[in-house]
Amino acid sequence: HSGLFPPNTLFKLVRIEQAPFIARDYTGREVTVNQRCLVVTATFYPGSQITSGSSCHAKMLPPPRTLMYGDRSAYITGLQQIIHKPLLSMEGEFKRHVVWRDWKGEQYTLEECWNYVSGPAERKDNCTPGVRDCSNHGMMPEDFQAKINKHIC
Image (cartoon, rainbow, N blue to C red):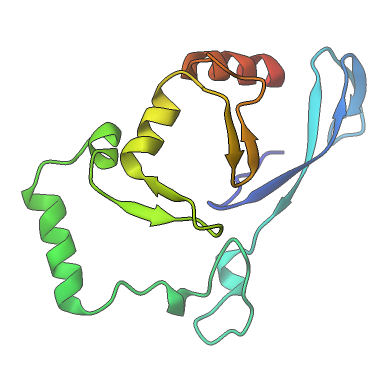
């Protein structure tokens, strides 16, 4: 049996079964698995459970009535900007001048974020969540990808 999860499904790691382990398929037959198994829970709301009049609010899926764009002219303006202007690359999006502050008042820009995620990691003390990249100094994005792939394979 197989299935699909909807967008915005929240997966939570419950435990890791080390290889090899015994699993049962849907017929009850035992199978030896020579791979590590990540056991997760999935939290989501099927679209049929939430209607525009519903008072139910999920963290991962707001009711449809909150998913409004604005008025018709704002929708048309946004659509024209997408259609008539060339699309930006991810890097181009981050080159726009956007500045914001986090909950502790620390200021950030899109360009600083792009440089952080596309270049070498650098240890930085006194960040909002604490010390950034404490054990990752000098790692490049492809190093992080290799580390993650090694963890899940």
